[in-house]
Image (cartoon, rainbow, N blue to C red):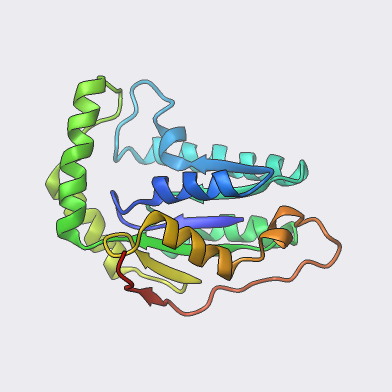
Length: 198
């Protein structure tokens, strides 16, 4: 199980999809995609958010039962929002890794403007994110950082380099066959920041 956390527009979806293409037998679970399956979904509606989590928990259990790897991506912001997923991994005796995918606020604002234009052009049911909400989520993320395996700055690292570094941190062979009888449990290490240039 690989979990990507980070602020809105940080690059979680992009990195998740790139890694998903690298790993065999792997399911990609996007909490936002699940949330927006509801036609009248509202961004900050707690009921819709909790429902998305409940569905994701069941998806995790089902994929694990069928011997699939899992990538989960969401702006979790607080550790309490990620605990259940970690517990599911531990209960099933599989490895779990947590990575932060982030960027400076100015970069996030620029990306959000582009995302809003795309939403408007495609007439998606997703709501555009206001600058105020983006800043609020960014501050919540910064104020509640918790221990992870590594933090990547997508404003200074290319997608290719991030995937390469994750490849070095994770035993892809072990991940692809995580139902061995005695898998090695990897506990999150203190936050590490990466600032290489592209």
